[in-house]
Amino acid sequence: MSSASPTTQPEVSVPAAAAGGGRPRVLSGIQPTADSFHFGNYLGALRQWVDLQIDYQPFFFIADMHAITVDYDPLVLRERTLRAAAQLLAMGVDPERASIFVQSQVPAHAQGAWVLQCLTGVGEARRMTQFKDKSAKGGEGSASVGLLTYPILQAADILLYRPYYVPVGADQRQHLELTRDLAQRFNSRYKKTFRLPEPYILKATGKIGDLQEPTAKMSKSASSPSGIIEMLDEPTLSAKKIRSAVTDSGSEIRFDPEEKPGVSNLLTIYSALTQRSVPDLEEEYTGKGYGDFKKDLAEVVIDFVTPFRDRTLELLADQAYLSEILRQGRERANEVAEATLRDVYQRVGFVAADLGKGPASIG
Ligand code: ATP
Ligand code: LTN
Image 1: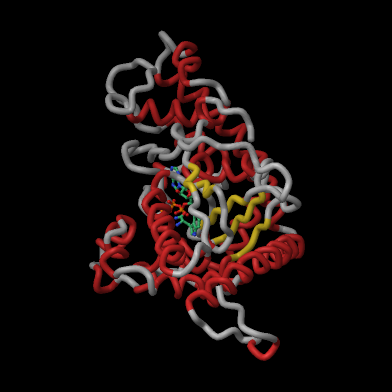
Image 2: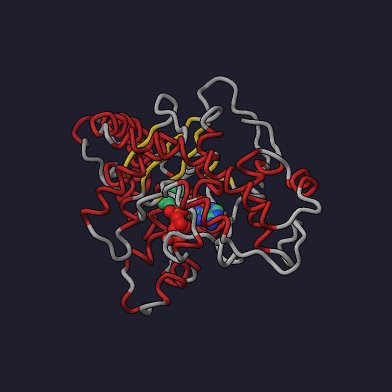
C-alpha cells in the first residue's frame, strides 16, 4: 500500500498483506449509470481500487444488475458498461493484477443473493437509507422490488469473494454493515462460510461535495450538471465548473467544513489531486482570494483529466481488447464465486447437482 498521507488515510488500520498463501482479496463494484464517472466516484472510491491492487488481489466489477433497479435504457446500459470498463483501465486498474468483470456475467451473484434474501427481514431491507431516498420520489409502492433488495445483492457480490476490504465512498457504509450482519447470520445459522469484510473508506475523500451545494454529495443522479465534475467532460468545461463553484462568505481560504463547506470541498479536491496537504495549501493561499485559488485548481483539474480522457477514448475504440479483458476477469471471478456458492448451497441443504458422482459431504 502507498504510505498514508492525509488524503489517503483510511478509517481502518490496514495490516500488511498476508505473507505467502496468496494476497488477501479486495473487491468493489460501480454501477454503469452515467456516461462518465465523476470526481466523487474517483476520489471517494476508485482511486483506492488502483492503490489497493498493489498489495491485494483485486476483484472489481461493473454492477449492471444494480443499474436496472431504477428506470434505464437497455442500449444505453450496454454502452455505459463498456465505458465503465474503459474508464477503470484508463485510471490505472491493471488487468494483469485485477479481475475486471461484469456482474451479470457471473451468475453466482444472483444465486447467492437469493439465499441471503431468505435471511433478511423485509423491515431490515426497508430501513436502508438509499432505498428510502431513492423510493421517496415516486413513493415506495412504485419502486421496484429490486431496489429494495439491492443491498442484499450487494452483500452477495461481496461475500462470495471473501474479501478483506471493500473500497467505497462513505455513502456505502450502511450497505457494508448489512453485509457484515448477513455474513454473521449465515455463519451462525449454518457454518462459518463468510469472512466479515471491512469497508475501506477514506476520511478525507469519503464524501466529495457537490460544487453548487457542497453539503450534499456529488452524485450522478442528484447533482445538477454544474455541481458535478465528470471525468470525461471536456477539460475546459470542468475548469469552468471549478471556477464557478460556490464559495462561502468571507475571503479566507481555510479548511472548515462547518463554516466554509464550499472552500473546504475545493481544498479536499485540490489536496487529493496534488498529494499536497491541506495546511500546506492554506498557507500558500494566505492573503490570496478565491479567484486565484479556483483558477489554480482549475489548472490542476485540466492536467488531471486530460490524459485520463484521452486514454479512455483510445480504449473505447478497441472493443476487442475491452471484451478480452472482461472475458478474463469473468473467468477468474466465476471460479472464486462458484466455489463459495457451492459451499453455501451445500450448507443450506440444497442437493448437489453432481450427486451421482460420490457421497454428499456434510459439514
Ligand atoms: P448515485 O448518486 O446516482 O447513486 P453515485 O454518483 O453515488 O450514484 P455510485 O455508482 O453509486 O455513484 O458510486 C460508485 C462509488 O463511488 C461508490 O463507492 C460510492 O460510495 C462512491 N461515491 C459516489 N459519490 C461519491 C461522493 N460524492 N464522494 C465520495 N464517494 C462517492
Ligand atoms: N452500491 C454500490 C455499487 C456496488 C458495490 C457492490 C460496491 C454494487 N455491489 C459491491 C461495493 C461492493 C454503489 O456504488 N452505489
